[in-house]
Length: 277
Length: 289
Image (cartoon, rainbow over all chains, first blue to last red; front, side, top):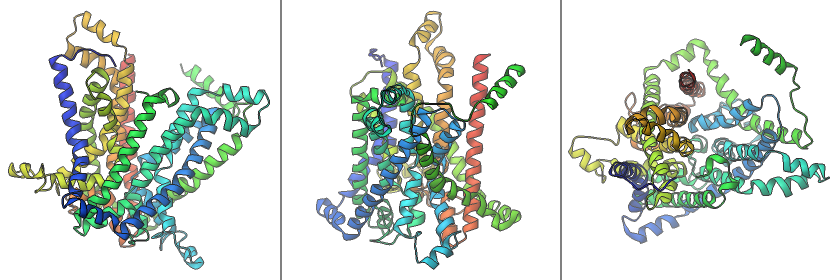
């Protein structure tokens, strides 16, 4: 970025860009808070204190607490294999890992129903065993894990590729054990990139709607996550309730953006190159 | 050329599948990666690829050529293509302004661009609906002009523009920042007008990144569900999107039908991305010629 003095033409461009962003991106955010407080702070707080909203909040945090660490371990393993070694099928593997991003969230939920639903491949077997996956928390976790699969891996793979394998090779050659090398050399080098990936993974895990909606069955107080609870309240015309719960999710989005920007500004050198600006 | 190619192929065939390395952990890391990928992605995906054929070829064809399914696919993919095209322009404008001009609050504005990534789609959906409903802050004045957005296909388009915008900005912006300013200055010194410089120098250099961003925005929008269903009105044949049709078929326990629609969506998505890819290749070849 250069500090050229804006000419009239560029002032028009800047204004245009700000108007577009204001209308498309900022206005919906303002609207969430405006609608939530339409009937005053009392109604807002009452809507948030409601037991089903609490249950939804708990479930959302539980699902993220399971899905995010699993995909973080997956991301670290995938990045280690792909970035530190050269093998055939490497680029195919990268493509496969990115693929869940271009699949509809609803399809990401559908595939689990095809496997574990009442008419699913393993449905009758699960029924005999008395295990429920679909319309149960397990299904919600599986769907969430699938939609958030690529997040950590796609941050770490380019970052580890840029860093190369020299430092690890030196450590191993000097006699360090494999785990020592990983925890004392690799992990400190990628910690900010890992945090960045975890942050985005967590935001999506807590906010996922389409995939979770297909497998959850919308059982209030049991399999309802926060985004699903927003939908239920909205469809019951409880708009203040829906927007009040939505402010919690919007707050999460704002915190995520704030932390993400802080990482981009303060640790730019330790993130993948595409994140530095 | 063909000799060099066949030599390269031969060299590739002789190469062992993995290059030697002193680093440990390859089997463990690759093992975890492949196991997780298979359990979480490939096994479920195989159900999507295989189950539609329980209907037989003709049954599959009957499902995907049902007028309601065709209309839903056309709405999802048509609106996604249109939204991605609009986002190409809007995203280019925002990326240009963020990378070329200094103005107060630029960093803050830059961070805001990612809000559609971070904001859960259901939240975006109800917020957009509240804004553009006939009694909403923008919906009311537009309704007086005779324009209805919420509960029409225009609402779908708007939601898809919202979810796709950051993809274009974030793929174009780094390229724009790295673009050699001297080339632009040389063009200007040699007598090109700013418009000529933009069209003949800057845009060709940006084209590959722009197409990548458009492709990502398109793929995301074509499968989008959460931000759309609240604002769409969901009228069969008119404003019903393909993912909603999957949900409806699942509620009727029509698994094979739902899988057929899902498979059709997957096929259309990849066709779209493939087209963009070959356009990218054609542009790259023209750039070299």
